[in-house]
Amino acid sequence: MGDLVSTVVVAAGLFAGTNVDDLVVLTVLYLAANAGRQEANAGGARPWQIWIGQYLGVGALVGISALAALGLTVVPDDWVRLAGLVPLALGVRGLGQAIRSGDEQTPTVATGLAGIVGVTVANGADNISVYTPAFRTLGLPDSLVTVAVFAVGVAVWCVAARWLGSHRKIVGLVDRWGHWIVPVVFIAIGLLILL
Image 1 (cartoon, rainbow, N blue to C red):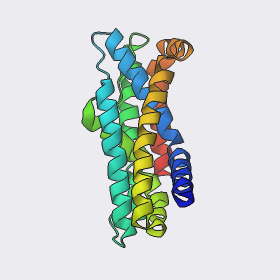
Image 2: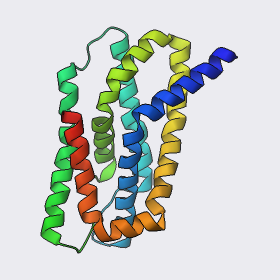
Image 3: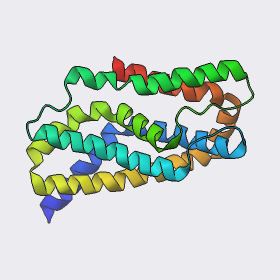
Image 4: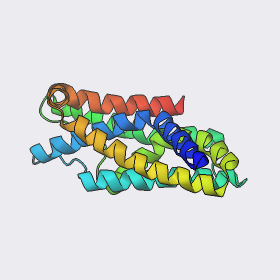
């Protein structure tokens, strides 16, 4: 029983430590979704798309890491950084929309399920380098427990981001500056992954 508890604690720490930036991304996605509901012409992602996209994206990262842990070279290290092009491109597109629209609306940087999955995978691509050695050393039973903890972690992150995305002060800030903040956050994440 002690081994199970320690595995859960380590897995929770691993998830939280590698996904702090994902909490920011999820909050931005919920803010954009809230703006999309308030403005008829802004098409933010729907909350269910954020949840499912997050699960599919994290699942893809875990799957790639598990395959790599089995000794397969699925994604060369140099290619992982190229995943930063996805949020960078979305951010540049959103910034272009903000410049064209002025202060009129908050641009959407990721729409639909595919966009959310893409942002999740691109943002978490660097996690592969952490998850791969972890899965290699854990063994199958502890790896399965870790995957279950990650599944719970995704739910916790989605709930926390939704709360942050509906907090009055945060919503007020985004209403005023969101059309600039949202794309800049995605550009920064893309550059961070690339560099």
